[in-house]
Length: 96
Image 1 (cartoon, rainbow, N blue to C red):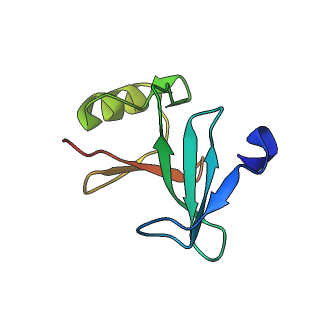
Image 2 (cartoon, one colour):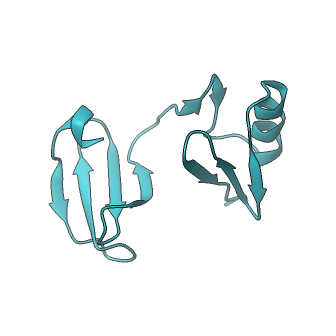
């Protein structure tokens, strides 16, 4: 993200993580652990995020799972989380 968006404005998050960068123009806030691992991505305005042609935001986990499996992508399902081992990321699905 830093390569795409620049350094962002750094700060210490109120909860979780060691530090964060706010990319105001992109509407994205990344929270990092001390080892620079991203542990949270927050969007501050409407966003569209997908992987392999599958929209990931604003959809029930079951719909995302069905689309991913229909495209024969590898997937590991955990409690409220889908892990994409070939891409190295996971998504948590929370119902508010």
